[in-house]
Length: 256
Image 1 (cartoon, rainbow, N blue to C red):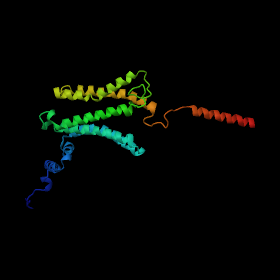
Image 2: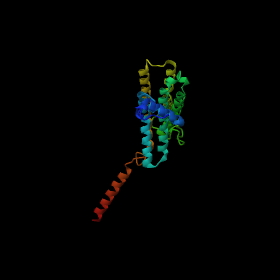
Image 3: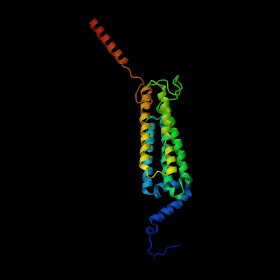
Image 4: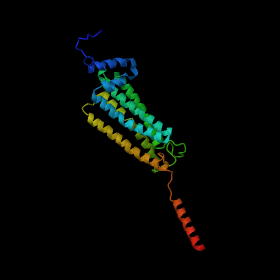
């Protein structure tokens, strides 16, 4: 169809914003792997986009920090592996946004494919981060642990039971989101949404509070973050230097 020159229809007027979106959506049908990402960030309501961006930012910042440390040190392990770990957090946030965006398309959450993609990404994300907590951050599962089974050769706290208890607590708190999903499917806790969000935020704060003690213990014992030039800091070399200086001074006085 050709448009007559006398017709007062401009291309900008014809391609209104809605038609523009429809046209782009049609083009993206040819590139289906990227279609849903486009719908999420371009066609979705602004609140869904904003929530997704807020969910992505923490993992993005941490991943950027890991990539920066790799750039500075050129050590692929642990920095690139750590960056890869945080990429799972990006997938969780993106699939959560897609699930919310397409929720009206399906009768319930069970029939929404993005719900299962979000669940799978959550399972992998929690599992990888739990394993990283134990092995990398806390230094557990050391092959030279000796009688400290599944822990490390040196521990600060007097009872090994504390460490085993914390491992179990950390596991359940890492996967506490399963309870939230179950409650949402069963009750759609809309009336108590603020309370539910507060409780699970409090649980996450508790997990991070506990995590800090054992992370700092591992750093103190093993310098795992390489923030010190040497593992053990001793004043003995300084004392030896003072003694040597005093001896040389007395020797010089005797000669003179």
